[in-house]
Length: 310
Ligand code: GUN
Image 1: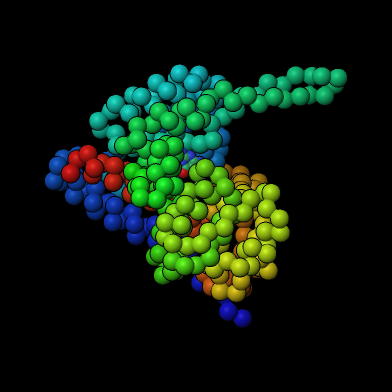
Image 2: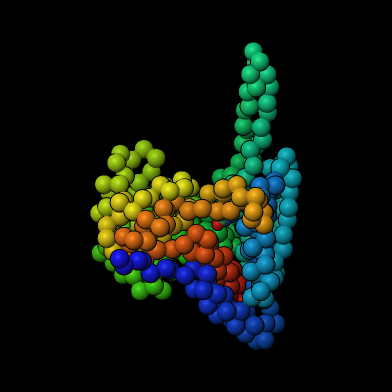
């Protein structure tokens, strides 16, 4: 039985990173400047800490300068805004990102012997993302960038990294997008929504599925391309796919695993073994979309720097 080609995000991302490293050293040589990225992390989520560490290490590897601010979970919104404005105004910094999700503060109390927890969003995510300088919004999360991505005839300054990485994987694997039926599972602001918009820009017919969709498997069975970003392990089974479909798995669900270095590992949304028997190409987790997100962040940061410096 045929098995799907593995879309090797790790090696594609490495290629992109070497090209970026060459361009960064050219900048350093020609104008004596390098791109700069600032990362703000609030709270102690272990997955966020890992992502941030990976981003900073990747900057170092390609010669991009990075600055890092770590704020405690209970910090005020003002403290986050202060850091953000400092980076917005720092001419050596071309990209600023606030790692999401921002923490929610919990208040627990006892009512009739049951412990009730209330989660308060003390940090207004939308307000904070709105304050990232548009020209430095390398995550592409600013509402103006997302709005421009959504509207025909407009161009966003930046497209968010994971969606851009998914498209790049398709293009570099020789998958045609134009005229194909693409199904996106998930409608988050940071993955599902922008991915569906990008696929439309590449002239796919796009269907979005989410938690309230009825019989999602009937829709995915019609898809030439399935991009899944639901965060539900083993959601997509082999029999959800049309033979020959291309599967991009953006799922990153942390599963406890005492044998791994950090005590957990990430699993995708796709039942990989089953899907690989039906699909023509598929991304693994890890080693698929994840490394591409970081490569696209570096690419966006380089773009941001070149717009100001060249
Ligand atoms: N949380 C999950 N993905 C991302 C991302 O690409 N950027 C930021 N800032 N936070 C995230």
